[in-house]
Image (cartoon, rainbow, N blue to C red; front, side, top):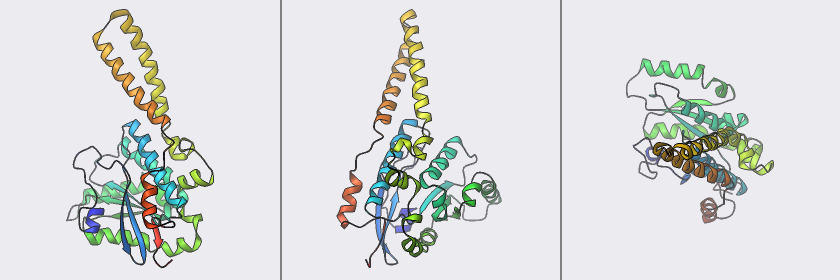
Length: 278
């Protein structure tokens, strides 16, 4: 989406099932009197330990941008309309999106559907209607808008400009409508990331950790009794996964790093959407 909007390869694109975006990647452009930063973020998937790390990175970027008085003008959430099923991973990803933004920010969010064919498709249009009537309905009632991306530069900028048109209103009203929920939780409510709504959605990670520890105890007993080679291998794998999860849970308090340096490049009050005329 970003590469098509810019007309060149400014963001890395993955062509496998493994996400290639590891850190939030900012791409800056001047547009309609604003310094606009399009922020490419890693997506959530069903690898639990990685979900914690992804939440940490996105949350820290949003926290740093808010402390630099940046304004989040809008959030684009992408959904592949060609996907035949609304999987558990897709459901969890949408839930994390909702938890990060909060219902109050839904009017400045856009759910962008991708992979539309060149011609019309009754099947995909029916699928879109079903998604709007079921999985996206609650968020749409809170202000979420659904738009189609047709893989053209005009289509990309139509979506971006739709978000930008409300910036004057956001600037006039201030942080009461500009902040995302997780920004308010981290800065105003002084919560730690695990205490936020989005952090609570990842509580299954801790439950998984406890379950694995219980399985490890049973396997250790089995290995001690029988010396089973397969049990030893499984035990080693479980211990390795437990270590990863423990590190992720302990590392939820993120350090301010690249984000701070990025904002400092532009001077103290520069953020995601900062008027050039100020």
